Length: 185
Image 1 (cartoon, helix red, strand yellow):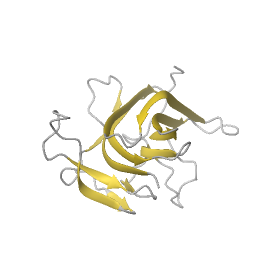
Image 2 (image 1 turned 30 degrees about the vertical axis):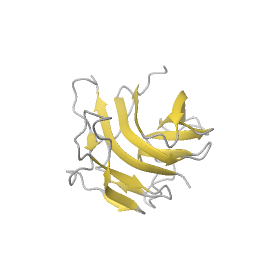
Image 3 (image 1 turned 135 degrees about the vertical axis):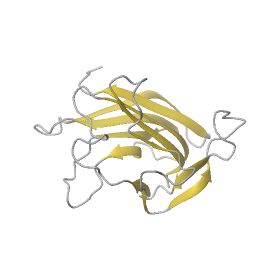
């Protein structure tokens, strides 16, 4: 069984990454300003990264634990062209602190994503972006997925997976990816 042991998230949308406020931030220490809905076995008030190993965090830093069997948190979609919708020219930065208990080879585990919830009101491929981890021989590799406007076949899906990673079940790790939609690099 694979599970993301605990997680803390920050999502950023910006034209100039250093000056724009984040589109969303979830610290899990207190009730969030954005209403989060739990699905499956989501355990709140878990120990997050803490000092002395992580001195920038509070000594009582909290996280959530997801059981890996379909557990997730969701927020209501604010609608078209919201702060969570990205298109050509928009920059996105996704970062999280994660602690993995296990990860199956070749099987991506979502850390955060927009869309693809299986909700009957939306198509099955309504995903805009996601930050994931993918297992490869006991190593967790970072994976970024995003979609452009659908064309012919599967050409609107774009995936990037890091060459390097970190060992599964080795404590807390900070992961991050930044991308400007439309930039082929």
